Length: 147
Image (cartoon, rainbow, N blue to C red; front, side, top):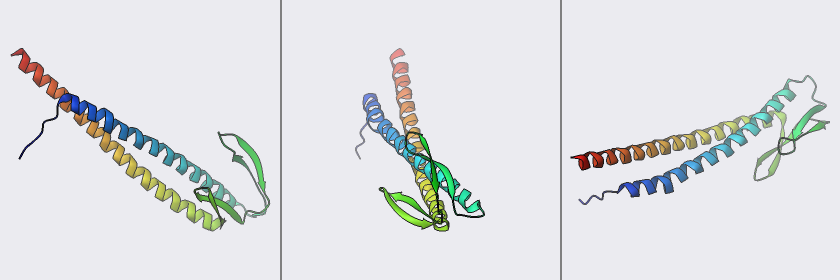
């Protein structure tokens, strides 16, 4: 059985080239998923507001038109709404169907975010472990040089 020992420089290169890059990728994915979750939570709040109204004939709100810029909007009928289901595809749902869809979508996205968060935590732990190994290795070499 042949074992290869990695030099300190190899470990440092691995940490910087692979682990830290993976960590950046996970954090980017997590930001995107969290933004999507927030959009669905806002939609859920709007749906609950509509469901809480006694009559569903007219609904006034403010709509985010991008860059946190809002515009006043009014819907004459709120029995059906269009929901972006991904890839800019919109599906017409009744209010109750939309509520169920949004609940499921939030659960799915939260599960994905948890998975990515776990991978991120594991990668951070691997980085810390690699840095500890490098530190211990350098201390050993310093102690051996002093003798």
